[in-house]
Amino acid sequence: MAWLQPRSLTEALEQLQERKPRIACGGTDLFVNGQRRESERTGMDWLDLRNVAELREVSRHEDGLEIGAAVTAAEIWGSDTFSIVPALQQAAQIVGGWQIQNRASLAGNVANASPAADMVVPLVAYRAEVRLAGADGSRSVPVEEFITGPKQTGLRKGEIITSLFIPERMLGIPQIFLRYDQRAATDISIVSVALVLQGSAGQVEWATAAIGAAAPKPFTLNAEEEHLWNGELNEDKLEQLGDLYSRRSSPITDIRASAEYRRSLVGTHIKRAARLLAGNL
Image (cartoon, rainbow, N blue to C red; front, side, top):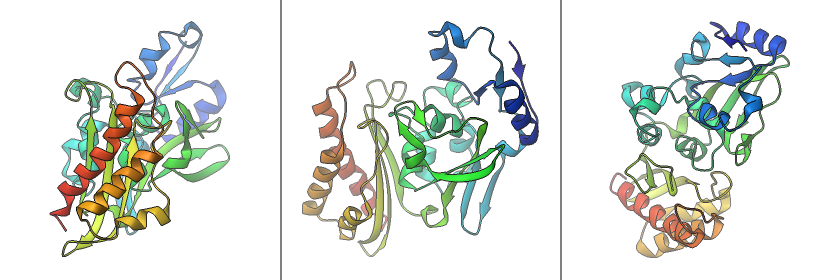
């Protein structure tokens, strides 16, 4: 078994092609779960991407914000660079304890594809894209499509996530991330919500929200349904929106909460997020 530590994307892709290693970019869930699978911890090479220079870059373009795959949760919430995406900062700040936040990477949170992954929820609300590189070239996929189910993604053999891209229109406008858990941010989410609103004078021009931990993967409404956000956010509209997101959810029952309780929390947290943001319009 070898622990490979490439310094460039080219070197990482070459090692991925030649040695077929398991990719690690933080590994906060990967290593814990790997202890349950003997085949994954004996005789397998590991490709550690944390020191690949290109994967640690952050850049603001004319069309949006690009965040390198290996940027950590601690770096996201601790840097003013990310003040234009406060919902992502809020999610990054409650990804486990500070030890986890110093290792957990943005791309790792996406690739792990947990239904309760905190940083994925704002990314889905942002309509963010996963940018990938492989032997056959580069491609981009919306985060919501890239994650296909619990612990399942569209990552192809020989590919590496290089960055996450957030469109310009999502930057620097009112937004919030809320979640409900059992132990003050050190447990897995029972339900989470990311909401982004654009508007003025108390009127919503457009809005988008994503729900986590209440379906096999984070979800949004379709474009037609999201038009319900437009206009004044009165109590009748908030009730409609809360009910709509609740009905779209398909939660499970587990040791943390029942499906019915989770479904009720979806509506509650959509309304709470909307009320908290409404004063900023």
